[in-house]
Image (cartoon, rainbow, N blue to C red):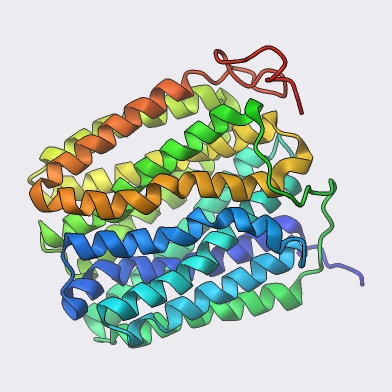
Length: 397
């Protein structure tokens, strides 16, 4: 079949990014208000729910087993479909158990999709173009989020649409875009056949460590920063939507530039800047008493996290090209080891001291900073770390 000029791997990544973002942004923006208003959640229940959400991420290593049966591109489509279904039905189960179940379904689709997307991106994009295009994909996701949050603001503040209708729309649009991707794009062949078994290589240890700390640290932002806005400062759904709107407007404006910046200054400097910024942001979260300042920190926090694409491009530079699929699953599992435990455990800490939760995030960012300084200025196979290379290990396949 003759392909059209627009039927490229990059454009497929864009369509899938938009589909995922619409579903997940709808789920995320409504979550805190929905669980508090409809299910009377406290910090303990929201922590457990977020731990449930991270379980499929912890099991992401099983993706490589699924790839024994189906190809990665098809797996991505099926994962997006599960994500869309989970979001579409979320509003119809406003109970503790119902929310845990729909969250788990949504999360299975989300985490498998993200695992496969990372693998496909690093296979389809060259080392030179990867930082720029990955930054562009973040910008595209932010633009899609802008549309979602603008709609949510009008839907609740102006038209009074119910949670059920909004969730149904968000999940339904994801399903429609997934069908378009499936039918509208050809099946792209990978240039390097992928290993279809689980593996961990000693020379990737720094990538694993950065990934683990990223998963632990991310939970502070994902779980508790938004919850702070609702519980402490009384943000409504329209307020949260407006905050997310501003947040993604900044990301849309700067994410593409951030990707180009990573390509220009290198992963070591980019991650150093990110973690220094996050140390300041998390410390400020612990003591903030102004709703406006808290919102500003939220936007700044998310902008710093855009620099985390440097972890992926660092791995692309040091890795065997045949390891992308298997390592993507293993990396997501490593990323979620702490993520499964931290929301529930820190949810209990939150009941005693919200400030302590954010100060622990400061400590995690400091550990990440130390790790980032161990990235060479010119990472490649055989030159993966500054310190910690064991003779015969760092250069072994």
